[in-house]
Image 1 (cartoon, rainbow, N blue to C red):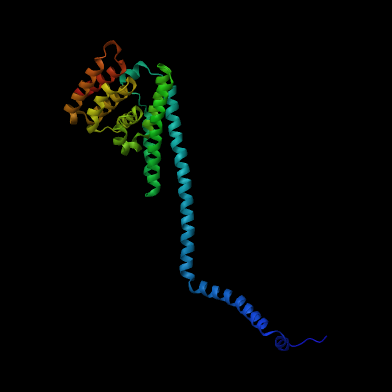
Image 2 (image 1 turned 180 degrees about the horizontal axis):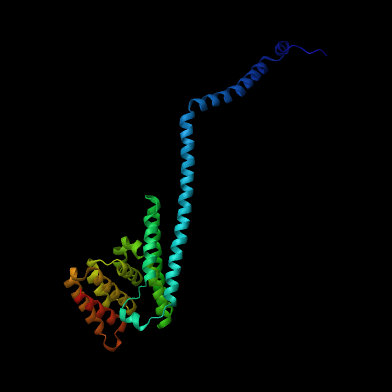
Length: 280
């Protein structure tokens, strides 16, 4: 059978079929051509968009890696300070010094604050600060549940001291939440967290509040309040002499009013604070 020329074949086909075929061919050619033209015409803005998208993806990955490293470093600091507090038995020397705060806790708190300060500004830093706040609230609950679940004695005291050590580890970074924690009348754990902040970050405005703890809290909490008063003396000394002296004397009188049941460690801590104040 001889082959017909294409034009002859087209003439023999029904007219709609010819038109549809031509339209299909044009469509197949037109769309790639149109896309190529658009891409060429808008190559610069498209390139900028691609570059921006790649940059955002890379930045997001860096932020995620930073947050993972932050959580890891923070947990390491918390684990080390709590472990040290659990393994440390109160000695006569520590009682005479009147402070349970170790040098390693101060270093850990400084490290945590540095981690927060190094966070990228904006939403990332806000998220990190909120993470510190939530952890502090968690430690407050942990203190309350530990005190309720364990019998009074050295083991419970050590467990609560470990929680206080973790609070101090966050103290420098958690200073912005001091007011919120201190004014929570329903949570002794949050008030303890505020006291632990004041142990590392003394504020003169909070000295009277610390003295009030002696009549409002359990012995464990008001002992730590006495340590915070000692820290205030060491920061302000003669600068706030009258304020500190009045607060310490009031706190000491309140503790001694318990007679034979008064907490001896608190008395020692307050006596030391008063002594240092008078020689400052």
